Image (cartoon, rainbow, N blue to C red; front, side):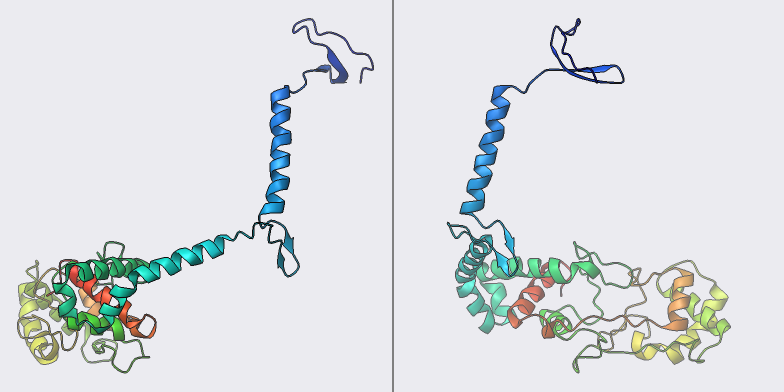
Length: 290
């Protein structure tokens, strides 16, 4: 390091006398305005520490002389919102689903609450737009495994499906026809071809003809003679192209072979009755409700 300062020939600025590997440091002090801003922020920080909660302690934190709390502010806002909603909540408690639909203000409140509850509790499975996914029903169409009337939707939401915790949950058991030894692989393939025929897809006519007899013996009781389905058993129609798990040949065969047993929580054990009503009204309003 050089001990003596000198003036840089190019910039005309005096050096600090520091030098590393032939590189000299120019003596360019910070401008006064920058220094004033720095000290202003220091003063502001100290004032903030004194006025507001800031320093963590062993069993809490400093409260600040102003006693401000963002949690307290939020609590006030929530309380105010609940107070504003109280009259609608009380109406929803006693109103039937049919009555809710006849009162515009109450209907609007129910739809808003149902939309919010759906986003938090249902969108993970049914999608943000209720479009569904493989194994999770689309709630926008007219295909309802357990019925699409408001009362049926409410029951399905409140009690769920095959969850093992609610005695009133929707429940049905489709046999695993291959795994349970009811059908052999050739018979299963014939039934799959017949299901393809029912849904208007390309199929092997000879196999479908053989499968028709097996279908009549094993499947008609739940799915109907024409594959129209039965909401009493949660048996889906097979005579259209709306499929919960997929309608291609391999997926149909896999469903017949191993069955499907989707599960839905009993939301009535998790959510309050008003929220269940709001969800029912919202789901029914998506366009597919009967």
